[in-house]
Length: 533
Image 1 (cartoon, rainbow, N blue to C red):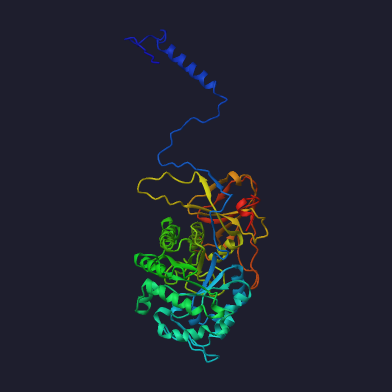
Image 2 (tube, rainbow, N blue to C red; image 1 turned 30 degrees about the vertical axis):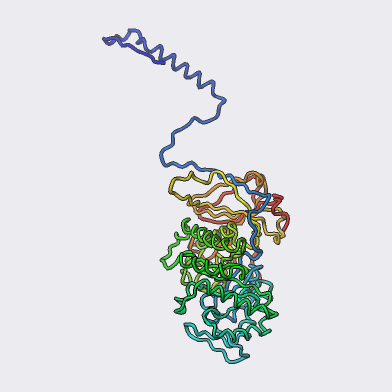
């Protein structure tokens, strides 16, 4: 409706009538007032144009598929590695330490892999009780007193029912065939049968760098077949497991080596193994551990490995047999800090979600700064993260469904979420929770808190929160952590602290603080996928 108003040519006097247009204007005002009055009961806000760049806070709705698991990983999914540097550096005797055994037992059940690059240069002589001799750097490490050092020390972990020994530290068979007869005699010795039942070799793609000689995938496969044939006639090794080829990062040349190996010996090994290093040879900053692009490099490597393995032996188990945050032993005050936990927890979630059967953490003790326990036997942030994982997470992986999290994809752009959510059946060995419960673990890399509302089968269920945050003034660089506001420290050398949850009332929204990670047990869901082992 248009209102036309005509003004007189001359200004009216003070006692003249109002302009003729005022009556229609007054009528419009009255109609507008009546219209607004009729909408008093309608509480919906009128649409408001938001300023450009202003983001509305989104409540994330979360549900989990509870009927069937999408994956089931090994009971020993999170396992440990000891580096052979403990032999050269004289730390082997400390493996029988009560405090260290207590820390190892906390992460049971697990495989204990004794390995690393130096394993390829350890030569064992079957001599009883001679004087100890440890050489300098290079390929001539000799451990004369094999039975005394190895069996007496690290088998103490096995006696505590904490770990299963998962590797025989031996020479590179493919580079030392002339010593095959000597190796055969060593394998015949019964005294090793109670300690070592599985064998693996290390990083064949780096042999040229380490030893000046190279080996291709086909030859490596033939050597594994030869090793298997040596083991079969020996009673104590007839059922030994063999893992390999334990390659490094799957670049083009490494994938070619794996392809040749799988073509020849894919059916010989019990699991295909490789190693992963997130940050290689660069200056590391604390913010590097928060980069989603870095976190996602692992996913690409998994797909490359799976593609080759499934070409020759579909369904063959795959192990990530050695994972570190940074190369060359890690970075002080970073690789051993709270910040490194984002990479570690995301690694655990991503590997299980993509079907990797076992991941072995390098190293449990005394190797650079990537370890879980420092040289003073103090547990570091990644240890407490691993302990929570072991206590709360079972082997069955569940599918997560969210609404309000993903952004719309754009051509040529990869969406890398800073809020990462994984779900498993709760560990059935944890007697605090009945079977059918579900455990979520969440990583929030945002600089703002995130709110998550449980929906569907998780709606209105009781939740136990285990929020892990840095403790102290160092922030993300802290080497100490707090659980639900309480610092985590060992009670004494033989006792780990109680991991107390914070109960959240049914239906309460989960609030994830910025740059933190935590576990959330949703109780009494009665999930079909989680009722039975």
